[in-house]
Length: 212
Image 1 (tube, one colour):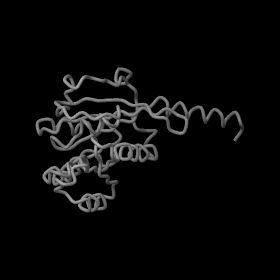
Image 2 (cartoon, one colour; image 1 turned 60 degrees about the vertical axis):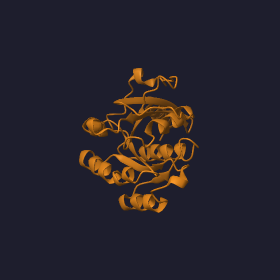
Image 3 (cartoon, helix red, strand yellow; image 1 turned 90 degrees about the vertical axis):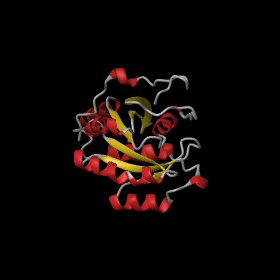
Image 4 (cartoon, helix red, strand yellow; image 1 turned 180 degrees about the horizontal axis):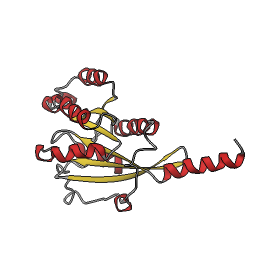
């Protein structure tokens, strides 16, 4: 390949990365900590007064990957059953999903396979993983770490235990999913990799204003 063609190809690759957005949906039952998970990743903060999501919200962060800008958007979904149909429709508008459960709540763990079934029914190609949140509350644990590992192995997906409060594995879990998305063969042809400039604002609210 000539130098001019190589340079042109490199420019196209750079343009591809810098004009695309990776959308990741965080799902799980009410109270598993989805909002604080996102808050920690986006703003590196934790709020004990943060309220459960009502409906849907999104927050954006710009990462540097191999000297290129990667725009990452995390979608916060409501866990209430009334929103489940809407949540399911989002499975075809994102590139990745993190299923969150609370290690102190057995029912939230038992519901993970229900979420997986919904994902598989709607979009078999989507990349997803499991995270057991609130691992800082080990004394209240109801779900053993091996149970999470076994579930991850069963579906051949990544598993993490995380804590938004103590900032444990938040970046690692999201970034591992981002890497899998970037490595996906379907990346370039995914029609959802378009940027809505209105969604690029990282919204910071006071704790009293934050609804999700």
